[in-house]
Each structure stands twice: as C-alpha cells, then as structure tokens.
Image (cartoon, rainbow, N blue to C red; front, side):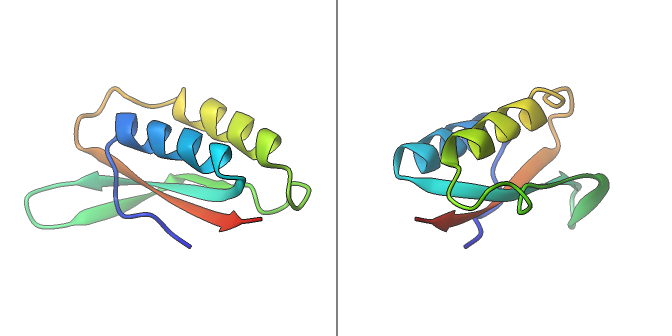
Length: 85
C-alpha cells in the first residue's frame, strides 16, 4: 500500500505508527511541490524492499535514517510504501 503525500513531520509520525502496527516500510519517495504539481525527486527514492521480509524494526530504522537527510525544504512531501504482516 502507499500513503498519500505527507509533509516531513507527518511522514515520520506515519512510519512510527506503521511500525507499531507491525507494518514493514518498503520504500519512501520525496516530491517537491510547486503551484501546479508535485515533481518526484529522483535522487531521493529509498527502496527498502531488499530488507529481510517482516523485519519491521530494520525498516523503521532505515526510514528514520532516510528522513534525517531532509527537512530544509518546506515544499517537500513524501509518500511511504508499506506492507502489513
């Protein structure tokens, strides 16, 4: 499943909630919004699908490391791809 586009703070909270519900984070994508659209940031795509299946803790740790790189651009939003176990 994939989340809606979320600002950084909400995306971080969403991944924490996913982990508490035993969901593995499979990937995260960053977008930069302007007046008319949201452009994907092709240099900010995180793919965690190669992590051990069902390893919720490692996927959350990876998501935290990913999000730590961002927060300086108020036009950025994120989508989170996840799977329930």
